[in-house]
Length: 252
Image (cartoon, rainbow, N blue to C red):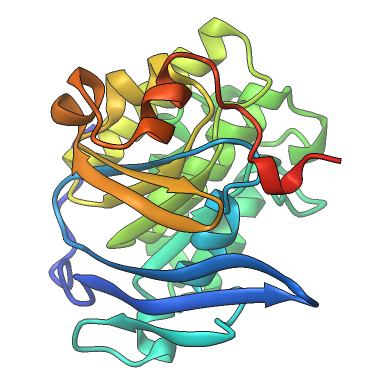
């Protein structure tokens, strides 16, 4: 099912991170990160455990504020930007309601009412292959079904930017394939994807460009083909070779 593109698309991109740092106590989690993320491509953030990938997503999404530096959305203040973006977590945050009610409630928060809300709810369930589970409590669905529901709820909101934090972690291959297909469909509808993954196969399948973090710093930003063919930094080489999976700073 192809959705009519939202006329507000490209209202907030590009996203600029300007010398962003984030501290927790005496520990610096993100260190002077600067980059510009534009529309159109699928951006995947890679790095060893503890590199700061999930924290970077949360900073971009506005869930946490930087200790220093600034996160800027083009042509929008932070309040306006929130209406044009969404985030799906590794463990979906679902309400104690039916699958359909989870989608309908999200739409109601955006001011969608009556027949339009019912139509978009049904459309999203069909898009995710969940129509038969519409009345089932969301929290008793399987892990893969819950993640598809979270994506369907987001898809119904028509965001310009979607942040995904390890969207298929712990899922079996069939469920992972379904999630990747959903992501591809979201991109086709014009939404910008910014996501983290530990699955290098998934990164190769999905990424248009790569942000590689090491010890809280962005040390490489390249087109996916270029990065996988031959990264510039030795830390990135070690990561692709399987020799760097835990950031040294996080080891006991």
